[in-house]
Length: 194
Image 1: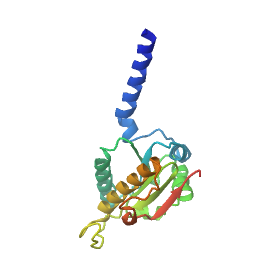
Image 2: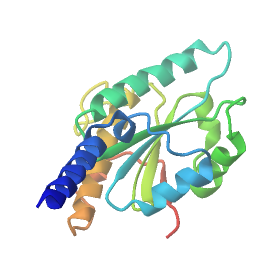
Image 3: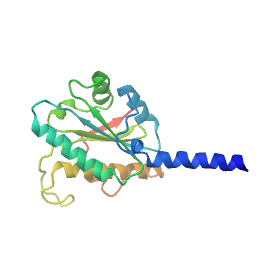
């Protein structure tokens, strides 16, 4: 009986630690290079990953502002999503493991890295599949579906929410097409290890 209670206690503590640990939700840094991150993105069927790609350019205050603004909006938006793992990848010229992360982003995920000179890129993935979108921070055209005068950061957040809903639908055996799927902005589809 004591053994059963001890094992149950250990199981519960591990479950609580995993679900409440800030390392599992924000600033997940269990990857040491692009290949390591690719393995996680491909092999974790129950988790939805949000990967924030950014680049720092010395003296470019507009780019720093764009990176910080979308990062803050995104992490604030995702704080209530327990099934999300959020991580950041720095693709600045002096970043550690730059070539490995560039290979993942450019070659494996099909991301246009030249866009990082204008603003961050967000990839949303589940089971090795997903999409990426560029957060330019510029006002987009009025659209009845999204509202008037929305900027592309708001559009990125709405698209990320749609991607999350699509992943949830697929996890429940659905098609992955949800109410707002047609409005989600996708600049590129991603498929790793499939």
